[in-house]
Length: 292
Image 1 (tube, rainbow, N blue to C red):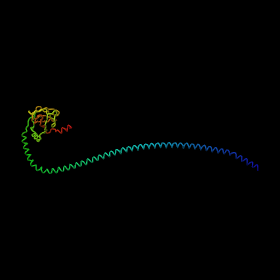
Image 2: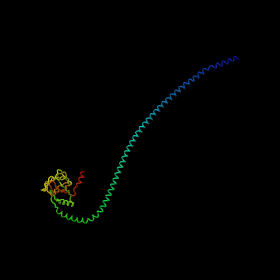
Image 3: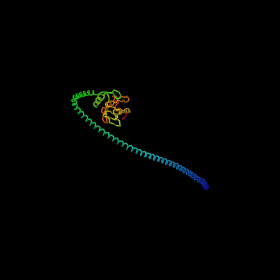
Image 4: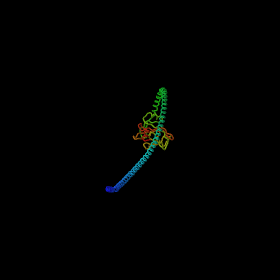
């Protein structure tokens, strides 16, 4: 019994020897696992920290970008608002100006319509007056015919007083008028153009027709005078000429023959007329061509 017991005791001692080694191995494994866990945790923490930093940087960059965009948008909105205000002010000003123009135009049109209506009424009144006078004109026509016949008789008698002569250039002159009544007859004949004048002694020439005349001196007792004719920028002196003497000269591009006749000579002036060919330029045409 003791032997057996001893044997069992030896077996138990033999089996108890490995227990510290196993514990040591477990502790070592636990330590290794702990180190691995710590290292893994550190690596994970470091990696997580980097991700957090990158996320914070990204967030800051995004925030800065958003702030810049917001600032640019605010600036743009301010500029747009200023432009909109300026455009609105310009539109208001233009609209006000247009309204004033429309009002002025409307007032002018109303005034024009009123004046037109007034002229229409006056025309209607004048037409009625003319219609009333027409009967009287018809009544007087018979008497006028008699007066015309008498006037023709007087004209024929006056024509007999007109004569023709040789001018101071030796050219045959047309009929010469000795009075204003004779001149009226020549005008009605329509053979030439006539321009009546009265000239006083002056240092400046006086326009007559398409030329200018300047009276230098006059002797009423002898009935003679001295006159300058200014034509085509030339001065033609007619010295010591007599009343009713045709003073002839050529002027114009076609060198047409003009005549000056004086039929009265007073102490300081003379009266007469300028005779020009029928196809000669008219004074109004000359002024238009000269731009006057």
